[in-house]
Image (cartoon, rainbow, N blue to C red; front, side, top):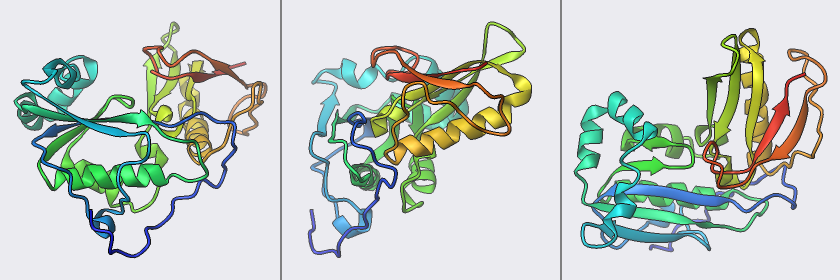
Length: 255
């Protein structure tokens, strides 16, 4: 790694509260990989954050670790949306897994470094990136456009908001995936009337930004938004092994 560049920009967490959880980094890169040469200024990267390890897997070394993500609903969606790239990924013989917990601090510099590291790998043989927490597949072009070229922390690009059919077909289950990257709970809200879709999305996106930038939602917090009914409250639920989130979550109870 070159260490001759100017100081890297800091990504502060302006809402930081110290009683949040530890961010969990988890990305799977596909392609071919040599020793990672990262140029500090070009990629805004000070190296892998403390606590995150890069492990390569290939045909002769635990191929099942590399292969487990090339199946399931997220893979099927990716294959349908981008069949050419998915076919190339399906034939990739190597995978590089970035995984680990980092300290919960008042900056998102760990995220800046991870983004820079992954971008550097794309210039050195990486053809696609899987984010298992968000259940998203990134082509080099979409990663650069939506993640790296933004040149600042953009939490909503790392978290997906889903509107699933609830038990009542006239209502949604609104839920997220990806907040564990920031060490904060995902969000869940059942029984949302379809007419309130836009207001619910606005509220969820506000919570994503608040938490990603360090905020902590207290138990029983009441939500006050003119576009939503009164009496909505937040309750912490779940565990990190829950398949719907792979994370703990906040259940926002619709009145």
